[in-house]
Length: 446
Image 1 (cartoon, rainbow, N blue to C red):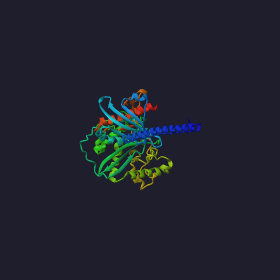
Image 2 (cartoon, rainbow, N blue to C red):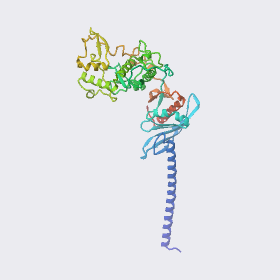
Image 3 (cartoon, rainbow, N blue to C red):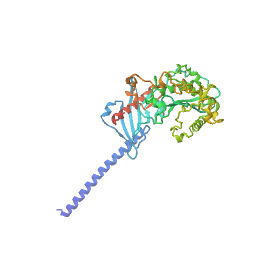
Image 4 (tube, rainbow, N blue to C red):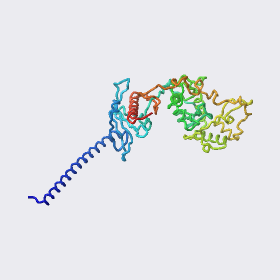
């Protein structure tokens, strides 16, 4: 018969054995789960790391997924500190007009900014063709839409460049703003004696306003036909093919019929492009131009652009010289205005005379001084400088949409590829579907 002390020892040993056994079982379970979780996370990293770099991934669940049949699964990625870094979507996408054509995609979206972090197609051949699209979209915000870039200028025909061009980057801008306080500029790059890059845009005197291209894409700047950014791209693309602004066949009203999709007045673009071409022949580079316009401002205003706070983030002087017409106006012997000087011409005069003595002839009367905003060279004829004003609010409402999303929500516009349009369009649909899911899942209010 066991004594009281023996029973106490036996019970204590039994309890200790039970505790150790439980600890071993729980530890083994946790160790096994930890190994399984690490193995699963390694698989996730291998599968998702190309579109979203993260230390761990957790699948999302919820009824909202039932509304998106194209989404196979969604994962949230975390860094080593457990902070969310983004989302990974596994999708099978088809176009509404062609349900038989489907592609499997994995896409990555940044957690904070909803910007693209990666794109991969399960089909290796398609994935290789879409590598350019991924590089174009990386860092861009969703949703995404295509813009037309059609042109009647033949891509097959070879056009000879104008003679005498020197390699370099050249630039020209208007010295006065338009009715919307935009200052147009053209930047042109010459390589091998040929125009290889052209950009037509405009910055605003109000530095809180986006450049015209961005303002047009966001709907803040409207013109008839395609938005201004697309028309600017189309006319620049045409000039790259034609190599000579005179070949754009500009009509007397400032428009052209040979570039599909371009209905705006291109007079300013033609004038500034010709100016850049002349500068190229002289070797008058963009740096020299910007230095000259800085000098013109300083000697005209008696101060510096930086001191006056008129230099924008891009480094351009956001200023209009319209109140000092004597700086850029050419007068005839009677004092009537007959044209305008370029920055290069103004600088040439400055090298021999002070700026306040620029006018070689008597100052014209107010009636003879041209109004820069109404001058035929600068006005957007027939379109109120690009603004289309409907008689009612309904006429100004955009009704276009993409993937059932209003165009007003589109954050990024890219130009479609010519060799893999369908595949790229499916990829765009994948990103837009991801956007719609996040909008519903996170209760976004756009």
